[in-house]
Image 1 (cartoon, chains in turn purple, orange):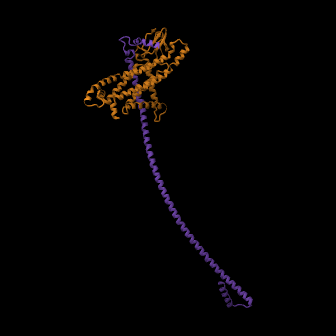
Image 2: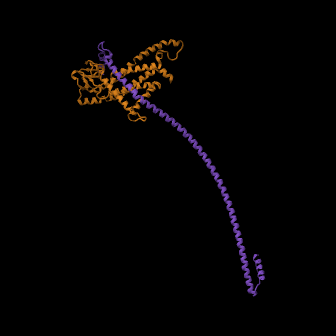
Image 3: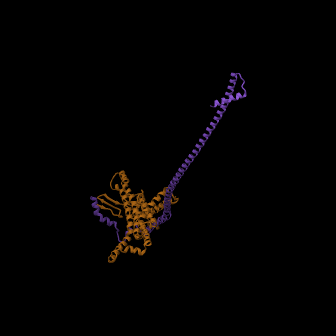
Length: 189
Length: 305
């Protein structure tokens, strides 16, 4: 505190000695400002200013501007791509729904067609089965008739043989004919 | 009590009794030439550092832009970061229209001043030099008991540089203002009534705006002075502070190792403070220049906004 008081007390003396000592010493001289030194500093600053402006800031600003433009273009592209994507999504949805409709139509057509084919095949099978049954029946009938004829013939022969042996009589053709027709009539019944 | 004769405003040492009481600083107010009496009298320790910084900036700019790629990497990346940061600041102040024209000057000011300020914090800058006394005219380190002529001095601690930059800025400012608003437009802008007041009140208020215009002209005329002195004052004060902190323990009769430790440790907080001040002052100088340009072209820009 004492030191500060002494300093403050001596301040006028200090300031007086710091100020120009005579009227011939200007403030510029006190600070060492003169034209050659001033111009040297100005020249150095101007050189830095001009060289930086032309060879540093200009190319860097051009690059920054170019980058800014590219970013803006990229953003535009991004927006366009997003719009296209949205459009493509809509189109995709449309195509998918159209495909679904077509598929459903095809499936129903196929089902109808399959049903028609199945019906046709079923009818054909039924007809074929009926034909097979009829044929089988005919064959059965034919076989039955043949069997019956054979049976009649065999039975007739057996009766004739038996009658001949029992009666000891040789049967002529008229007798055999008579016996055969009686046996045939009885077997048919 | 004894007060030692002061060589410069910053070379103040107050003694109480026989022990030093307060050391205010020992940095010369002016940059000192290497050979004052020769034609190279302009080549001061500050001009030398300024030239070195100029070369350093140009080398760095070339390194950053030599093979500039669309996708940046390495130093180009850093340089672009700085350029973009400054450009956005400039654009915010002066508007989109003027920004491309104003940016190179303001960016140069910012980069040049910031590097110059920080360069002064490097060890040896301002502390290694020649003794001013004939018997001490050998390369030496700074000491509190004699004045030295530093080999290197931070350029922004030289009023020639700060004044020179301010002068260049004012020329560009005049050019831009006249180009944007015209001489008549500038005079109208400065002296003309504002606020759209019409009628008798509008006429009555004209002298007030004329007076405001005169004050504005004085303020404009003082801009280079305020710009240059602010920067010079801050950096010069910082240099003094660093010297004082480095030599703080010298004022007391302490053991040598304590004095050494104090000379290393005491300036550390100041060092970080000066790092901050260096960047801040560069920003202040550049932003004020931008604001001055914006103020003089405001109505033109304002209409376009």
